[in-house]
Image 1: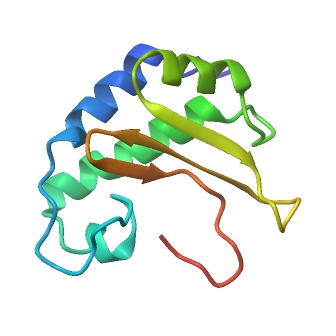
Image 2 (image 1 turned 30 degrees about the vertical axis):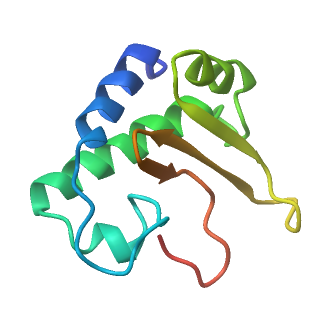
Image 3 (image 1 turned 90 degrees about the vertical axis):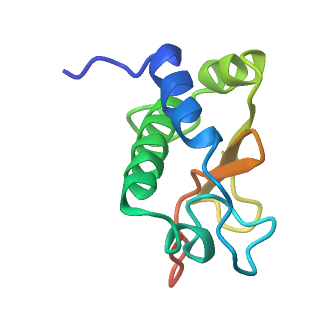
Amino acid sequence: MCKPTSIHAVRQALKEVEDIERPDADNEGESLNSPSVYNYLSPEDQEKVDHAVEVVGDYVRNPAGEPKKRSITTLNKNGFSAHFNQDQYDPYRYVGSVTVGEWEINVSDLSSGEEY
């Protein structure tokens, strides 16, 4: 059995992506892991983003993939704006994000035909 992701690991992963510069493109308001931002990042920054998405996603989901309310509350208490809930239109999909600095990291389930 894997050890659960800690808030310390999440804070560290988010700290690593906080200062990534927004690429010059039409991407204002887009999440850090959206294609309009991610594809323009350096390979090193892409690795940091991949790690943050994985760590945060593990932290806010229970083993069944559903929201871990306590973890989301802990993120908010640690100064991050976080939400992760059932999608309004698709009860089999969860949507959410975590904001760090000027960046938002999307941790939503993909909908059909969608990619980050």
